[in-house]
Amino acid sequence: IILDPFIGSGTTAVAARKLGRHYIGCDLSPDYVKLANERLSQTDPYQPTTFADGTRQLSLFGEPSR
Image 1 (spheres, rainbow, N blue to C red):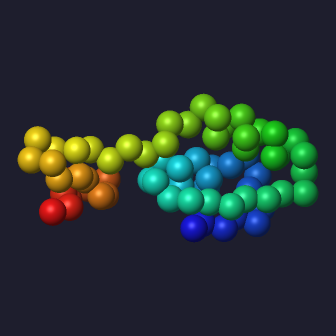
Image 2: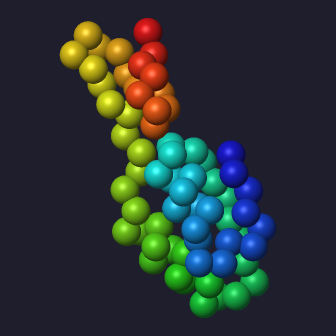
Image 3: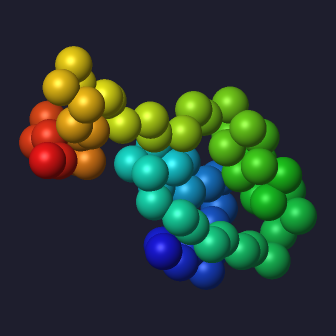
């Protein structure tokens, strides 16, 4: 779980989501929270690749899980 106590525009949360990680972010500025939520709503979550033999990719570096 990635904790970002100053989420700002949400860059850390977007990266965490793309990498399949859970995240928690907060900010005092309602404008930044709104911006981060908008960016996250436009970000596709990480989906591991399933290979023909049924193994699934666990990392972005192509290392299959057996």
